[in-house]
Image 1 (cartoon, rainbow, N blue to C red):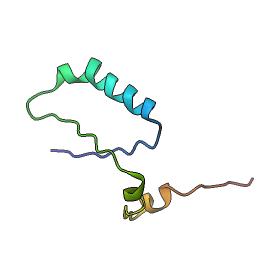
Image 2: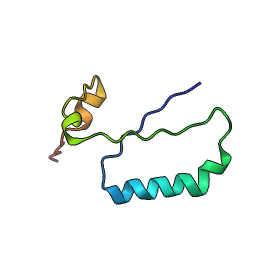
Image 3: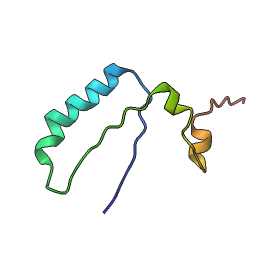
Image 4: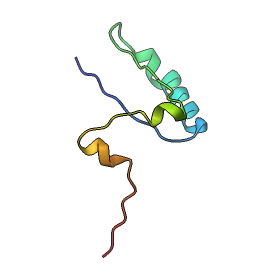
Amino acid sequence: MQYSVFVVQNSPRVLRNIQAEIDMRYKKLFQKTDSIVIFPVCIGCKGKIIRYGYAKHDIEDVVYFA
């Protein structure tokens, strides 16, 4: 069993495209144990997310100087 979480920080249009792709391509391939769950997170809740490890720094802007 595997649980994966993907964070999509983009526009409502991108989310609609992802949902359309799931409906058109993947939904028909689901077995009884397969599922996709989409959790919208409001702006207020985004500030309450607790991150550890790499995820803690994943949201920070990074600037590289060469």
